[in-house]
Image (cartoon, rainbow, N blue to C red; front, side, top):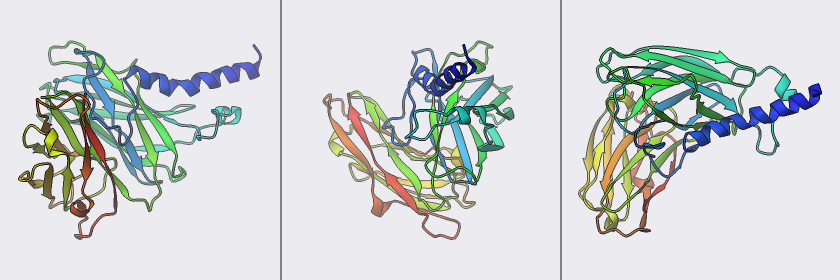
Length: 341
């Protein structure tokens, strides 16, 4: 095999790697994926998902790793691989791009792994490779209380290199080979990894806020949420979401997880098909970790028919976020849907 043919073969192999990991994890989710997901990969496996992330050139990016079911973890090792996607018009990486050094596009600031008892010891390392960057995190919790509560398991804070451009995208995949989790009894936990995407926005663009829907069966509970995709300081505000009241089997339950920042809130569920949540964060730490900052559990009527659906919408007139000075933050709202299937 000539050197040129070998390089072309290697090019094709590298271009396919991120997609193969994503398929193995049950899909590649991005903003507006229309569902919170599930256990995926079988009843005994634990879905380990990299949330979609957004950031501006030179800005801070938070890559959040989360699960969808409480399952206590004592220790673990997780490796996330970040690969720049080629431009949409290109067929793939060129030979020049393949053989040229890759400028680091992420710089690790810090990493946190959450445990209910607050006893998780964490070590993280960012490594640059020829075609990508990998972030490895090792953690241990003597109480075995990592992931004892549903929600974000870990967050990695990076600074994006100023050289990245708006519209650039990067695959965020969990490398299944070096990744391992152990339960409090010392037994390995089977994981179902799910990939995410990091998207670079213009510095002047609004922060994206999403009404995240779900797909459920009649009589089940739809797990809905109001999602953010990057950290920005929130001192207070309101979110108002609406849906078809005929689909509901009862009022929603609301939760604001303290892992997303210190916050107090009130929830108004008095009007069917409408939820209003007012919140305050005295130290503006709310949304210091992005994700499902407002979680909503909505019972679906047992008499709902397969195929029924409803928009799940953020009301622009009743949704705003305030900065430390009490000024409204520029946000772009994205709606979802609830589907009975």
